[in-house]
Amino acid sequence: MVTNNQNEQDLRLEMLNSLLTTPHRQLEQVAQLHSNMISQDPLFYGHLAVWYQKHGDVRDHQEVFVGNLLTSSLETHRDAGFMMLQEFPPYQVARIVDFMKQQKDKMPRSARTAVTRYLKKREGNPQVFDRAALRGRKAMKHLYATLHIKPNPRADAILFKNKPPEDSLAYALKKLAKTETPSEQATIIVTHNIPYTIAVGAVKQLTPMVVVALINSMSPQEVINNLKSLQSKGVMDNPDVKALITQKLEKAQTDTRVSAMKSRVASNTTELDEDTQAQLNQIMETQIKQKGKISKPTALLVDKSSSMDNAIEVGKQIATLVSGVTEADLYVYAFDTMPYPVTAKGKTLADWEKAFEHITAGNATSVGAPVDVMTKKKQFVEQFIVITDEGENTPPYFDSAFENYCKQLKVIPNVIIVKVGYSYDHIEKKLREKKIQVDTLEFKGDYYSLPNLIPLLARPSRLDLLMEIMEMELPKRDDK
Image (cartoon, rainbow, N blue to C red; front, side):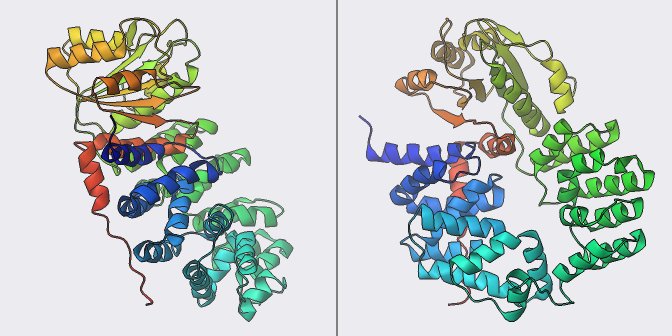
């Protein structure tokens, strides 16, 4: 019989595990899970929201957390949501407002006050407002209009009347579009720090002088985001431009605002020179290490049976992530009905791509096969990561092989199943019937979310992670 306490524990773990699920800009897909959590364990939910704001990578979850806090019946939640909302860029604030109105069907007075404070604080600093309006013009207009918040005269002139004052960034952008000479364009870009994505649409020709000015004004993350665009325009062939990009990428290693997987995606989707590729790999490795170090010996089992091409690709990514932060043994096996040891010469994605080079999907599935081999070889681990759809159909089966492994090596490892494709629950059910603890993470295609796996693997136990979350203090509203 399952008790209520067990249900609540499962829900907490389900919420943690769901942080690998990708909503693809559709917040309603995670709304029900968040709703269940906040109703059944509101205390944990509040702390988890704060923890995820700091450690999480999926913006959709961050937005749903704040939307739920702002509409919560608990004053501590509403106060925390009030303060957390102030940290978002305008487009996310607009999405949070739409989530509350469309999914929660309410817009509490305190939430409206939070947005009003957000806008008025930016109005009070013309430089901050101008940059927010330039980057998120549509979102800013939406916030004023949908909540019937009256803009001050300057904001009204910039956003609604299209008559920006001469000291505004919007006016400088208009001037940039009319300027013909590269030196004048570069001066305007540098003086007003106009973002690359906006300036590139205003200038008719990207001369080296203009490009240098643009890159100087870019953050390390913006350089990474726009590498493909810069490459396609041929500007990276210029030695001076290339040197500037190299400097920006060096800073990206320690910049806390840089997304680890965005450097991976940039590396995968852009034809870059070897030095730049190496820099992007180094950025990812450094950023991932900030999420924690794995001190427990680990086994990564990657399903290569029929239709498991996606599992192989995910396996390469997770192998890269884990090998970059592990301080203990890492054993990697691909498997169908037999295991294939996979060994990389290094820790980069290129190294793991090479290691998996001849691993192709095909044949039936025996998830227990690599576990049996590890038992025979006495390969001791404290956690298994299994990437599979759980469609096991051939012995040795995982639950039996795992029990024998525990008996022979006198250890009870944690089991994390990363579910890919059209998945089942066959293996996890078998393990739970035998009172074996298993966590399941559903991967739905967004590689940006994979670094969320590291905190689950880096803590000595799940309880340590849960207690770390509970120790996060909820921010208190400072205007009461």
